[in-house]
Image (tube, rainbow, N blue to C red):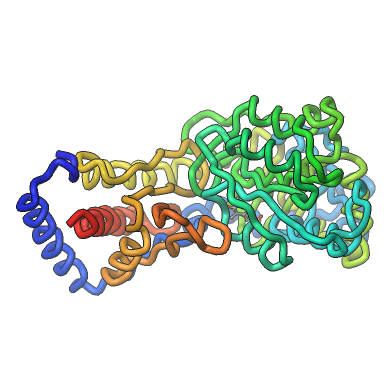
Length: 422
Ligand SMILES: Cc1ncc(COP(=O)(O)O)c(C=O)c1O
């Protein structure tokens, strides 16, 4: 029965039953963690062979000796594989070092210091700087814009993308809005997948800022939780056709494909944007780690090799997502106090609890030995105005720990809802 349909006495009875279950669990001194979206040791083991690659004596790719300086755009052999996965021209994709977050940070820093190819002046010399942030979103994106002093404006994110009416209205009138974060496929944390209509509107919309940029973070482009791979929109072609060829800076990486600590990142964009990026990047490095890029090329072989590898990841983590879904449904389903969409890919579940109870749910879980990402983390400045969203990351712990932790999350969300209802 829905919580709202319970009588006062029934509610009190349920709360006291939950409180005793909670006390018993808290006494167990558990130490479980659903905070960060990291691959598990079992997933890392899938790439163990990479540690022996490219191997002694294997150090050329085409005419390039990967051991030496140079090759700022990265190895063509590996770029071809990821260009196919992203559906872009290999000449329009560069391979860099580990962490796409570095590319995003650098791109915004270069824009701040020097301006983009379309800027009238460096962004630091603008009277004000603003940035659109679909919410809930990725906390580290917001960390970059916050660190650079760019004011963040939240925009609601639905299952097929941001509210485009709001986005179009804001960017049309305000030249200080210089860009927007987007995670178009299996968004962190909701699992949203942008539809074609949203992509087309983002590419075509009129922006008051001539140098408006969409950071198109395709971090989860091949990270399926089903047996299908998502269709990848060709943003560059759509944007070029719309007369905005420099709008999108698309990034992705192998962080959650091979090793997060030793991966390769990629940037795909217009020729003008790539030339601009490489010109500034070449001041701070004489080339990326091409040995690691060759190792990755050897490891995957081709784009099909990446897909096969991602299906092995899926086998490892899909049961954890299924368990989380089953436990939330069993614990919370009948009470009508929470909602969550089971993602078809990516690394997270966004649990929406009763307004005003996310912080309390996270606190209760912590006291019972389950670490959760702080409530509000998926919002700019850590401020979820409804105190409703909790980001759950089930990939890292073993299945049994995910199950134990999710039982506690479900219990705490319900207990917090009961207390709020009284
Ligand atoms: C949306 C998104 N982008 C980027 C990253 C980090 O990517 P990288 O390891 O390539 O810096 C993450 C990691 O959680 C993410 O969720």
